[in-house]
Amino acid sequence: MPELPEVETLARDLRATVVGRKVTKASVSPDAPRLVQEMPVEVFEAGLRGRRIEGVSRRGKYLMLALDKGMWWVLHRRMSGNVLLRPVKAPDEPYIRARFRLDDGNELRFVDLRKFGTMWLTDDPAPILAKLGPEPLDEAFTGDVLRETLKKRTTAIKAVLLDQAAIAGVGNLYADEALHYAGIHPKRPAKSLTKAEVGHLHEGIVRALEQGLANLGSSVGNAAGEEVSLRDHVNLNGESGKNQEYLVAYGREGRPCRTCGTAIERMKLAQRSAHFCPQCQPLRRRRKRAAKRG
DNA sequence: AGAGTAGCCTGTAAGC
DNA sequence: TGCTTACAGGCTACTC
Image 1 (spheres, protein in one colour):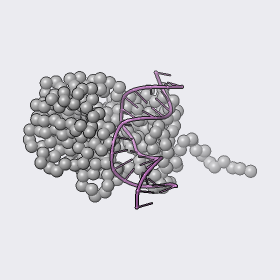
Image 2 (cartoon, helix red, strand yellow; image 1 turned 45 degrees about the horizontal axis):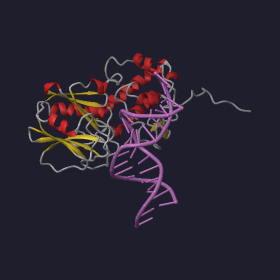
Image 3 (cartoon, chains in turn cyan, purple, brown; image 1 turned 90 degrees about the vertical axis):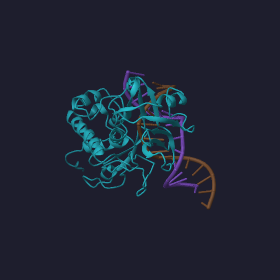
């Protein structure tokens, strides 16, 4: 699913391909009535027409395209949203919810099986992004910053990692990965983490996200060998990422922990599946020696 | 105010 | 075999 590494990969691909291009036509499918936010679809389509893309950035899981005339095109992929860059004449993929013709013979296609994706056209993106917490890959995001956030929270650490107001851009997959790297059980109350554990978690978050980014994202739901698979994240050219091959926790239920060989377990937490190693990520501190009985 | 959860959405897979 | 149900999950809106 698109989290920080997947959205950042998309932002980088777009920066290399569509900056300087002009949108000559925008059309949103009538079967995606929730795609455009806060304005009628016709206003959105007319507002994008003729706009030049001047820059591409990312905040949390939001993709931001800076347009001329001070406008911003903001996009959130949610669960199954993908952006593809294709020649106008290329055959359609299934589930195209909107298309944006460019002035070079290509078009951007927003493909979204589950229709959770959202877009805005605005002269001020700040309200859309207002609740987001710090960017985990910024230098300003330190172990101390994370410790300040966690010390007030009584809920499970994994629920906090999923809270975009606590840390922007971490979702279910990278939260499981970060907790595994840190050796922390997903159910541990956030405020119960020691200073050392918060340090390990900080390192785990950065490590999980940077590895995902280096591998151009995780594509866990796509059928192997399918050229353009649309059940999960694909990049601008339609290819899957590679990070699913390197995951240590997410989606590995029943398979051996890469550290100790114990079977990875799955549990329900905060209405999400949480994957963890019961040996490397114990809920309670293990006794140093087995208790003697009798 | 923090915590917990229904609902949005559709294809796949498990269960009867 | 064919139908029903559960599941995947980012985020908002809602309740307690």
